[in-house]
Image 1 (tube, helix red, strand yellow):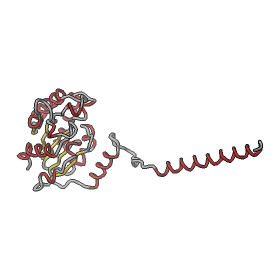
Image 2 (cartoon, rainbow, N blue to C red):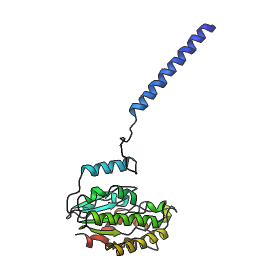
Image 3 (cartoon, rainbow, N blue to C red):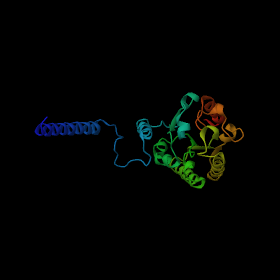
Image 4 (cartoon, rainbow, N blue to C red):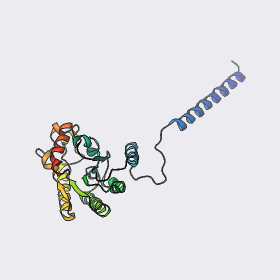
Length: 234
């Protein structure tokens, strides 16, 4: 192969590589799936949060309903099946925080629900102080009382975790400190406080029979939760 032929071959290979690269980039650009861009996006992001909030936008809460509001613990069960005789609505989102609840609270208050059962804050405690989380919780309560004054509010304590399964990301000492703050907040705000922690804890740990990973609940765990609150459901 002479020098001229080699040069032509090199140019041809380089040109073909450029075509392949351009085609690949074009495919990636048009084929990848992105979350829709919003002019005023929520502070929380991610597909699950977007899926849930857009679903909630399409499913307004019926008036006089009972709303369960919280994070993945609330999200992961079928409240309408646990209480089939009541109009029960699930407004849980996995990974949510007190700030996330505040961002989406208006859509709940628009329905003027009969009751709201709150369980939120455990995700806050992984990176925020108890005091900061209780302050956000106080804002939630104030917003509900101002925007839906006839709604009966139930603050549910945080549940214990099982550290042997969940690790040391969070401690039950911090959870109990948070619950103490929530109990005090409930008293000063004139709302109900439900002590779920004591019903679940065994030696300050969440028993293995009630948890799949140290924090989320098994079916038995949800039945215990139901039994702990059923007398308050109206």
